[in-house]
Structures are given as structure tokens and as C-alpha cells.
Image (cartoon, rainbow, N blue to C red):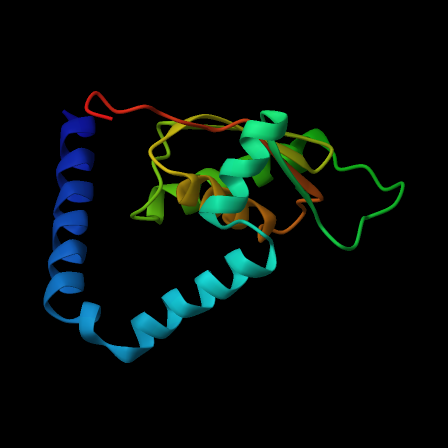
Length: 151
């Protein structure tokens, strides 16, 4: 019964948030500016759809490293678990990404993403979200674009 009420409350918040976005925020210049910033970061990290597609077809994975490495400092297991939890929470809040279709594993600050997504853009965005999480040193993606039934 407790799970039902938690689900009901989460559903109500998601419905209210979606309604607010479509009625108010979608036309707000601050929101569109935020999307421009995300697009600029995707470009800077070379995480565009064409680049992701080319790298996937060439190597079968996509890999990006932070410019600054933490040297010999090794992240503890609890830090790795916290990094994984932060990334999964960000995916849960992102309307373009599914926390259920992307597996996140962290070892020594190195994040591996696996699973299926619907576009190369989603791979880029998933990697960007992970790269911008505190404690992440490297992101390795084996995410694959799932083929649709009609295409």
C-alpha cells in the first residue's frame, strides 16, 4: 500500500511538471537558453549524433575522458556507488533519457554506460550528463541505438 501511495505522489508530480512545461516553460527564453547551453556542451565534447554514429560504427563504443585526471588518487567503493546514484538520478530527471534502459557502472571514477537508446543524440546526452558528474574521470559508452520495428 505504501508503494502505491509513493507511486501516486510521484505520478502526480510528474504530471504537474509536464503540464507546467507545456503551458509555461516551453516558451520561456530561459528554458530555451538552457537547451542552447546543452547543445554547446554536446558540441564541445564531440557528442553530436553524427560523431557518435561514426565512432560507434568504427569502434563499437564511445569514450570520453575529463581533461584533468585525479592522478593516482583512487575513488573508494562508496564514492563509486555515489557517482552511479547521482548519474541515475540525473537520468531519472531528464525527459530525453530513460533510467531503465541505461545501465551505469562505476569503478575508480570510470563510468561505463550500457543498454539501448533510440538515437545517437541520446548517447551523447547520456555521456554528457555522466561527464558533468562530480568524481567522474572517464566515461565509456557501449550504448547502442535500438532499431525500430518500422525502420
